[in-house]
Image 1: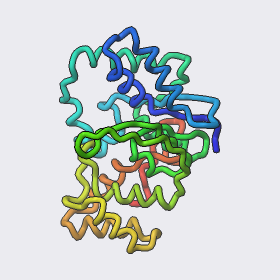
Image 2: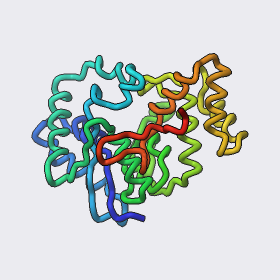
Image 3: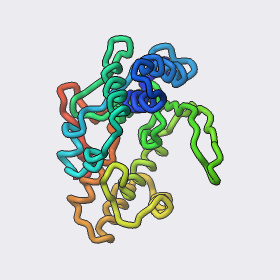
Image 4: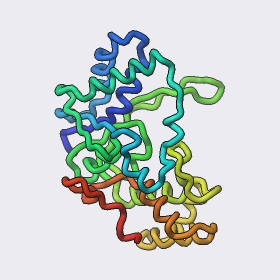
Length: 248
């Protein structure tokens, strides 16, 4: 397992901004979260930050990608704290990783799939990338408003399972990120389609599912490219992005 961890800086900044109402406490809260989110055995920490949504390469493929978030109205105090928290992420002590056209998810996906770092985030979509992952402890309200705490989890995601999750995401789309996939194809239908197909034929099965549902190939391929969290070899240092080219 790598001894380096790459943390979701967007998520750290947002949680810090929501945790306190005092903007002066934001740096302290960020450091608390960083300590809590350090995977066991990791001695080097970096944070990954997303590009501006308008610059995101996915918008050149699907212009409505996360477009609904541009219209969200954030309470003024929270907005100020979030802006400050994101600015802090770029300070030297956090060893920020940033690429103008990529999301933090892509940077973590490239790092985990190349086995250079453990990806640290609560976002389950990252599990569509193989490699080491650390999901920090978190709490949520369960049935009847009962607080449920999920313990931290360190896991290795094998490539076949990551591929399964990616192809499911390709079929389903993600309304949170504003790309629709195939209408009314949820997790159960998507998984059933794929587990009854040999993995080497998953691309063809997804394309066939889109065709059967009445979508053209251009739309189907655009959904794959938007859904794909980048892995090692799918981004080059000169800024060129390989976008699942074997589909075209």
